[in-house]
Amino acid sequence: MGAAKGERGMEKARRHEEKVRRRAEDISRFYLRAGRMPSFSEIGELAGLRSKNSVSKLVGRLEGQGVLRRDEKRRLIPGPAIGGRTVRVLGTVEAGFPSPAEEELSDTLCLDDLLIQNREATFLLKVSGDSMSGAGILPGDMVIVDRGLAPKSGDIVIAEVDGAWTMKFLRKKGAQVVLLPANPRYAPIRPKSELKVAGVVTAVVRKYR
Amino acid sequence: MGAAKGERGMEKARRHEEKVRRRAEDISRFYLRAGRMPSFSEIGELAGLRSKNSVSKLVGRLEGQGVLRRDEKRRLIPGPAIGGRTVRVLGTVEAGFPSPAEEELSDTLCLDDLLIQNREATFLLKVSGDSMSGAGILPGDMVIVDRGLAPKSGDIVIAEVDGAWTMKFLRKKGAQVVLLPANPRYAPIRPKSELKVAGVVTAVVRKYR
DNA sequence: TTCTATGGTGAACGATAGTTCACTGTCAAC
DNA sequence: GTTGACAGTGAACTATCGTTCACCATAGAA
Image (tube, rainbow over all chains, first blue to last red; front, top):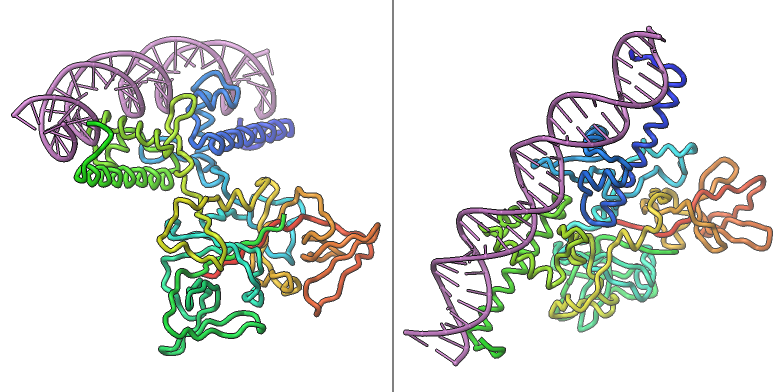
């Protein structure tokens, strides 16, 4: 069979491709549910293959597509597409959705990896009060706070001033340190005694539904 | 050796516990890096144990603590603490950080699971334009959009009106449908011909650092 | 029709994984 | 001292895993 394929051949190839894709999804789901990759026999069960050799061929193909990968010890590990905790990134709001649902050309990213650098030092706080509403941080939002970062001027920080905790912009002018709210109804804070910065806000998350 | 332990015994037990904890962390890191659980021999390398039996005992203990688990086939899978993609949740901004870093009593959640319901139908869009700045959605933010949800009045939606894509509040009054910006400098949109709602905004994410 | 690429079967085969057993060394309790 | 728990060693042993080989069946291309 040469390079050129007839019409019927194309149709068959397409259908087969679909089958492989579905099997890849099954494997992905398995990984997500079980927390580990399925063994070859388990993949066999998932895909309805009775021979481990068939599985071996399937895995080889999925490897070629980058769906599956192997580590140094040739053990199966999830490829970038699998492991599921990733979302497709489309363009901007203006661009809207690419009409024919051209997902493939869009890249994909993992929200966790995007939002969290050092997991050990990271915490979530729920926002109450509207002192930062001018910066788009509303009551009820969640802020992601990193205790490990060195606070710089311009950062939004969680700080303890005179016994109370607040979230404000940090502004440093020479040795002077000021905490600025993002709401004109609140006054800037010039800490008298000491200013304990507990962490830097690295991200904000708001959930609607 | 009965229940009561002497002072020196306590000290030793504490130190040993610390050791076990560190080993659990190593395993957790391995899982995160490699995408799979380490084998017993690999755990041995990680923990500095030369005998697989030692590893077996260690694993048994970690199982008891709920750090590790096994599935029906007795294969090692990550316990709830491992697998890492979870962040500790502390109280509110006002409450601030519990002073002595009392992490244990705070619960922990996974950002992905929080923000995404049906992964297949979910996309990320970058916001441009400030027509929703009144609702705390600023240019440069990322919105998480679910195509699968039925848009309800009050939702923020991504819609195509008269050929252009926008993000607005959806307001339904009877049969009438209006798209409301959250910025007084923009006018409400009453779609003439047709209104194609492509998805509902379920969350907003903004990254600072 | 014949040819051939390809998906699939089934069995035989190392290799490795995890279990189990007997044993050592150490340290706190007695 | 003696004793008892307990971390760790090392070596068998078995199950399972993934590879590999020969082979079948199908269906499009020639």
